[in-house]
Length: 190
Image (tube, rainbow, N blue to C red; front, top):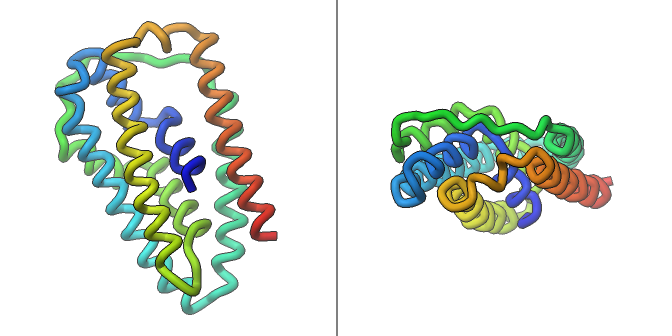
């Protein structure tokens, strides 16, 4: 649960890039409201998907196994894409992002939807809400800290990601972490 949450939260995506840009341009303190909005928005999206998903699992118990395998295969694909991503980050001047913008963007962000559907399908149980709620709790903390790390990165060490080689290493490590998590999950469901 932790490795899935970390890889999905800290890997580059639209929300992370906005946070990085805000950290570079305005500092951590002015970026925290956006980080908070994005984390709360994502967590509520995850709960929404997970609780609706639970209704389908109760009606069709075999669905969970197939969705877990499909979700794991998609995570392998995302891990591959992240590991092979071109090492470039474009930082643009923008308006200071607000709490509500972070919240709303998560509900519009395809990466967030895919992470929620994959995570809910993999970490839900027919027998209890406990595994899913544990996953939501872990994801909330990991997501908040990961997004905050992007703000700190932008504020304190933006030069670190300006190096293609360092960004490439970061992408490969995050991609491999996703692939290893997915392979472990596929093994558990097969």
